[in-house]
Length: 303
Image 1: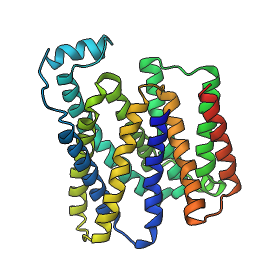
Image 2 (image 1 turned 90 degrees about the vertical axis):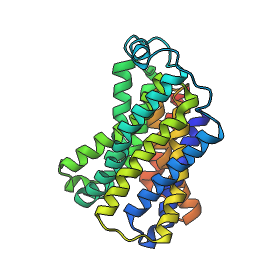
Image 3 (image 1 turned 30 degrees about the vertical axis):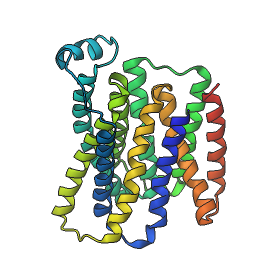
């Protein structure tokens, strides 16, 4: 549970940094690119510092191990194949990280912040459902109640009746839900089959690919580089990296169907509390209800 708490703290830190700088009129594309740049640079430093790739030898071909580990569900990949798996999964899902950001911005414009935030957070249903169907990670009866309360708290915090009146099921909101959920699911896909000691390689490729796409996108938009936007991005990049880093570690001891609702709901609650204590923002009644539900869910899930 300690790793999940650390992942929640990192996730909330990202939002609180953005809140602190929200009046700076920064360019979101520059901030996003520099965020991904710092994240992949930090993961590269971790790889080199820990000598992660040193002394790795090939035991069997990746194809042979893939047959055993993924198709027959026998053990984990060797060091060599874990690196190959990290490259494959990281490269594929790095695109989803960027797409979820793009469709979030598009959905905010079309549907508003509340609805978009709700669907972005409810994207956790994708790794939950896939893990139950594919790997039979069934929660206990009491944990199901906790999961339901976590999801309910997410909806209460983000949704409003005014938002519901405006809601129309546009492609942007569907893609936001799908790409956001798939981006989160990448952490589970890596953790399920590969050795955790190579997670920094996986994260390097996730954020390197996301950076490349983001950089190309920003260049096509002909955005102007500003020092403050780059600094904000750098500040966000480190907690962004470690949010995924600790989430992967937490999945070793917690079912996906348990970890993701708590991760999402816990992040929202910590952001709310951070807003109250740091920025002196009032906590609305619905947020107080959501905090209470999350605390109850936390207790139930750990029973």
